[in-house]
Amino acid sequence: MARRTIHIDGERWDVYPSGRVTQYTRDEFGLVFEKGTGRNRVRRVTRYSPLGAKRPDRALAELSAARLVEFFHQSQPAWTSPETHYNRTGA
Figure 1 (spheres, rainbow, N blue to C red):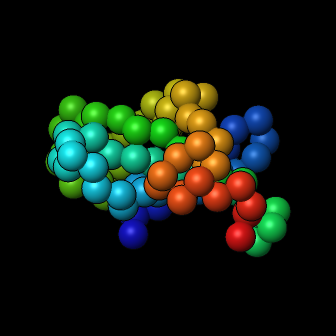
Figure 2: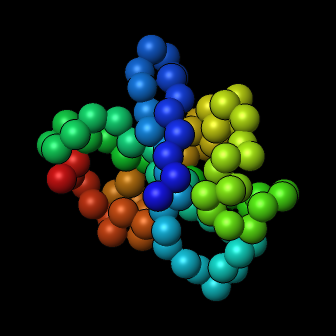
Figure 3: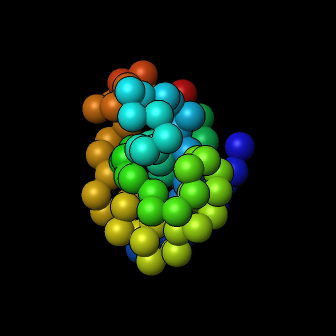
């Protein structure tokens, strides 16, 4: 799975496609932002429609770091998203 790393407010976040397929298949992708591990893990999720590539890994590679930061600020906690099975814990 393709991953990118960005830094926001001095914290390192890994970003990767959620892998969840919706009715919009290739027109919309989910992104998961993750920091930490185990019970300290924090995840946030957002969706976006890529302008170029129609494969999640390529679409992620085409995003600038600045655009990823914008998506991070639009993201929601993992427990509000089906991509992360509405999981409130870091596990």
